Image (cartoon, rainbow, N blue to C red):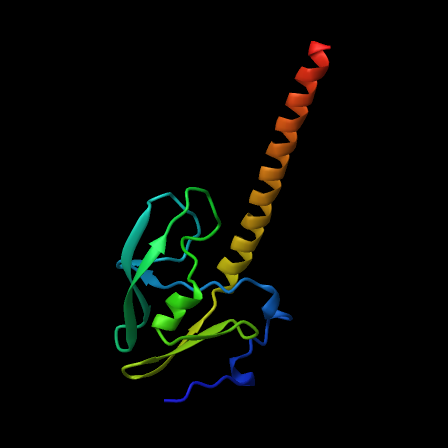
Length: 146
C-alpha cells in the first residue's frame, strides 16, 4: 500500500489550512474524543482507534497526562503516530495510515481546531492576567509597608 497526498486532499473552503492546529477525533478507550478539555489522571495506557467499523487500526498507547488545563483531551506525539505508521500532512490537515482494508484517511476537525486554538489563546491571556495581578498585588503590599 502506498500512501500519497494530492490536491484532492486540500480543503477547498479554507483559505490557509496550515495555519490551524491539526486536530483529529480518535476513539480512546471506547470513547470518541471530539470535545476539548483536560483533567489530571496520571499516566495511563489506553487503546486508541482510528477508522470505522469496517476498516480501523487500534494501538495501546501510554499517555503522560500533566496536571494542568489545556484545550485538548490528548496530544499525540510522533512516536504515537509512528506506532500506527501514520503520516500527517499539516498543509491538508489529513492523517493517512495503512489499515487491514486499505488506507485510512483521517481528516482534521477544523471546527474543533478553531475552537481549541481560540481557547488556547484565551487560556494564555488568563494566565498572563493572573500573573500580572499577582505581581501588582505584591508590589502594592511593598508600597503599603513603606
